[in-house]
Image (cartoon, rainbow, N blue to C red; front, side, top):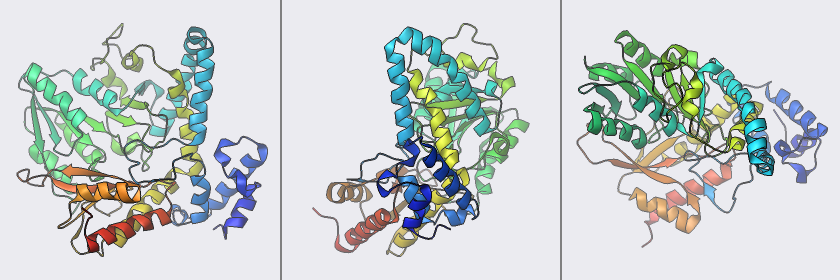
Length: 441
């Protein structure tokens, strides 16, 4: 383990004022990165998660606003400086002669990015479409799969509104039935969630929509078990991986899924406006594209990318985000996010009336944590934290487990790898103060 901060910085071969190593291409910076990475490989990812000297180094990769404490990184994540620099570089080149530079020179390079995403997800490049976000990815599937009046789509009350809206629209236009159910949170066992899906399936169920990890409480679902159950019954499963990809480690084989959509501008920290859709090769032909393509029933994954002129710079900069992700270490990043969640949660759990709405079991959650406190207006607490203390987070309404009561309002907390323990201490300190002394006004 790196013994102290000065030794750590010295090991980089850089001065104290040159910590922005991820934005430097000098040979000594690359050598420093290699040395530090090798040193971290000597310890487990869980131990690395607690090595503050290493994360001090990582924090300098972000040019973020330090006049606020941003604990809502789950919405859209800041991109590292090297990613933003890449966007600017490609954008400047494109703007020099857009039709020539963007269309002829930059657009073909997207194929390498497709291969890199496929390598990360563990599939063929011919199964990856590069999209603008997970909403576009999943609506391609949810609106493109064939359904008829009376067919049923099954999902939970916790799934994201944009995806459910696509289903509700099909219900209004085509007579498709949308069936939802709630579930206890946190569940006692992750396998209870698979059993609930199986319990709610009927002979009319044709599609299951499922979050890999929910945006409300950060609940991870047993995707593989649900996919295998559905496959036996001839049901298609569409997986919303908005908060999963780049958050914790997995590949397609671990999920045994056929259709998966993800954001790249959340935990993978790519430019805003990037995502991907995975469709198993033999399933591509049966999905109609959201935007009409020359051959809408072909098995070419690129048919889902016919959305008109768009900035190629955003797609090419995905490559830098992937490099950044793996230079840190995907498992080290996962363990750091989980460590930060547990850090603030264990401190707040001492408060009277504290309710953790997220399981702290490693197989059920990672960096996202949602809580509430009996007798406290959580929406007002969130507003006061920002207005008085410049601590930014959000509140979410989580459907009641039985589906009959009002939503439970909780505060969702999503720190990131650039978040310091001192910032989390300040967050905990201010929450404790308002719980003990009351909210102002």
